[in-house]
Length: 285
Image 1 (cartoon, rainbow, N blue to C red):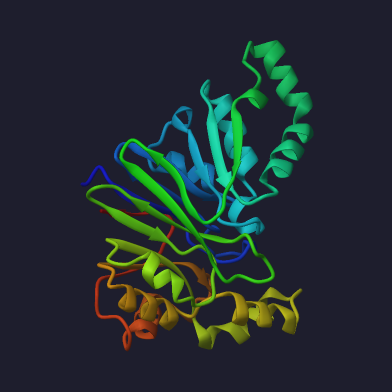
Image 2: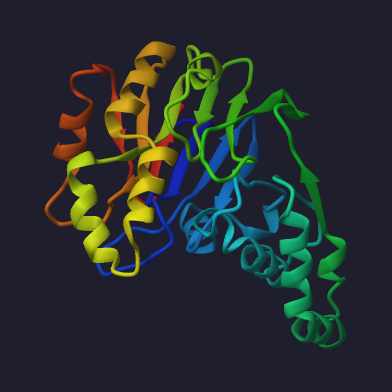
């Protein structure tokens, strides 16, 4: 197995959890010996441990945008890493608003944090977190790894980002949540791996009915703010990427649909290697 890989920890689109569903979006990128968590939905902590990661190693986190299925477990992940022996700084990169989230989480856990400082002799968790507000362009350069960002089309949010992770030997791109955009084609040009969100068009009406508390507004959000699987395939082909992985799957928990349906959805537009995302799958680079 390669020492450079991406693990899809959670591959479901949307915040709800139902019987049979996978977990919402989170990922682990490992490049040049660096471990970077990308998005922190429910289940990210368990997903990292299942990949064999010692939570004390947690150091770098990227959040693509402020929808709950991408950052709900950010605070609990950091807190659990602290309880697991973390004594080093964590850098969190993402949109404006993350600092408010972190400050609110830390305030909500003040009683526990203070108690563990006094009772366990731990250093103050609140001293270990740095939040960096990002924009388009190069976000991080470190140890032969360059991380860049572009804005995606994910209304009503403006600060919603795709990320490129590039070393001298490898290039992996994460689309984040987005409607189809030409900018992603150039951003992912020639990448070893494009991880792209995907919806199954025929499955949306029944999903809306199962959600129950949605309305036609939810359907309109899907249609204007996300990509069908065939859109992801078109982007991958236009970008000339080597492999395409579908994630943030909508739906991920309908027993009427399976991997073959996703393969069929891209077949007219993509003839390269395809990974239909499932929780815990590791993709070597």
